[in-house]
Amino acid sequence: MSGFDPQQAASWGPRHNPVLMGHEAAEQALLQAWSSGRLPHAWLITGPKGVGKATLAFRFARFLLAHGPAGEMDAGPSLFGDAPVLPKSLEIGEDHPVFARVASAGHADLITVERSWDEKGDRFRGDIVVQDVRAVIDRFGKTAAEGGYRVCIVDAADDMNTNAANALLKILEEPPANAVLLLVSHAPGGLLPTIRSRCRRLALKPLGNDAMEQTIARLLPDLDAAEQRGLAVLAEGSPGRAVMLAGQGGLKLLNGLLEMVGQLPKPDHAKLHAFGDALARDRSGAGFQLMGELFRWWLARLIRASAAGQIGGSGWTEIFPGETALSRRLAQWQAPDRWAEDWEQIGRLLDRGESVNLDRKQMLLNLFATLGRAAAR
Image (cartoon, rainbow, N blue to C red):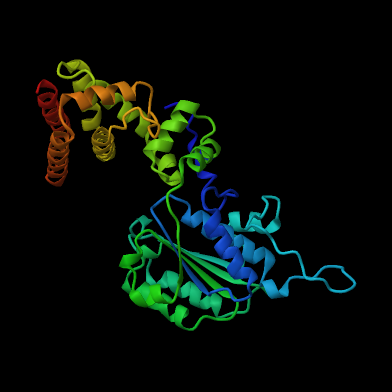
């Protein structure tokens, strides 16, 4: 894939990102809670990975740190003390001092809790540990450095181990004044019920097509329009997933795989073996895992669209040029229920192979053998 700049993509991480698209309702809910003067002290921001939960958390944190409590806003120079004009969005411009200090992790009244670095293991810890949460207790036990809000972002709350969760619960049970906790969670059902019950929940949904395409165009401007559209479909409303797939070459990987699928029942064996050799050389297995994940996703997309008669219809967007023709051709091989059986068989094949560390090239060949039987029916 052309035009992907990892450094540029990294610069649009949640801490640095000034733009949030597709979540206007959630933003207004936060703004209204703040302007009411009765802002809940803890929020649980939920939704699928990569849809913008952490971006919204940092956006709200910047707003709180810049504006302070609504009741303390300066009424301005009016002789009669007219009510201040309340902000209409959470936006804090990139030229604002608070934006720069949050981006550089230099604001004294913002603390973030995430998996910390384990110097002994020379890697990030697998969990958020109790020491990470104790830093919040220490910070919240002091007066706000700038007299406004103290804000804590936990990203992600799902990563907390039992001791860390219990330590955070103590803060939630007895929150100090003008302290706000923003908990990001991909799977809130796994959190302690007592944590969930003490937070106001704000659920984010995957972005719609228009917002997704606009966001990808902003995050990955060097990709051509066709690649941006393809990633928008492939990422299913998750800008974070789109950036991840761009970095891993996911669109190119799926395109190459489906190009060989389109040659069935007589594939180019030289290309197939070369593809398998490349996957086998990757000792991490990340490429093979991504290939399997993307192909299973694409086959499920084919089955759903075929069963509903939607291939090439008004709600259909090509991931790459020629996908519509390929999908129609495969849909003619067999009925959707037979494809569903093959989807399950391919899933078992890939899962079993990964669990016992089978030869990845051979698993690829077995996958194509299964597809070849479908093509020959």
